[in-house]
Image (cartoon, rainbow over all chains, first blue to last red; front, side):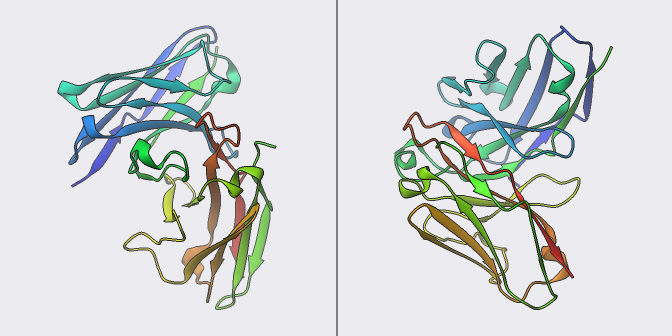
Length: 126
Length: 109
C-alpha cells in the first residue's frame, strides 16, 4: 500500500545538525513531490519546503533558507531533510508528505498532501 | 496579506452543525486544502480542490468558498470529528510557497 515511514526520534545539541529520513513505498517516488512540514509542541503546522522526487529540484521556505537542505535517493525511494545550526525552538515533529498534485495545478490550487509519514520528533537540548 | 486566518477554537453540540472559516488574500486565487489532525497523529486531508472530499472521508464534511473566505462545514458533528483543522493555500505573491492557517480546535460537546 501507499505509505511513508519516518524514524521515531532524534536528539541533537544546539548548534548541531540533524538529518531526518523519509522512506516512501507503494507509489512512483520519482513522479511526485515530497513536502516537509514541522509542528512545534502545541503549535500549528509550518511548511518548510519541497523536493521533486524526480529531478531533485528543491524549494525552501524563506524562513529556513540557508539552514535546511532536502535531498533524495531514488534507488531507495527516500527523501532526507537536514537542518543545521539547531536551536531549542527547532524542537518539533518533522513530517514529510507526498503531494498528490502535479505542477500543472500550482497556479490555482494548494498542495494536496495526501500521504504523510508518522513524523520524526526532533529534540534540541544541551 | 500572505496569511490565512482561522478562529482558534469552536465548539459544537453532538449532532449539530459547525462551520470553520479560513480567510486570506490568496484564497481569491487558489483552492484551499483542509486537514484534520487528531492528537498524536499526522494530518489527514478532508477537503481539497473545488470542494472535493477524499474517498473515506465522511459526507458530513463539505466545503465552500467565496472571495477571501473558505469554509469547512461539519453537518451532524460526531465525537470523532473533535480535532484540529488546518486550511492551506499558496502564498499570494505567486511564488508557490505553501501557507497554513494557525488551526481551529473543534470541540464536540
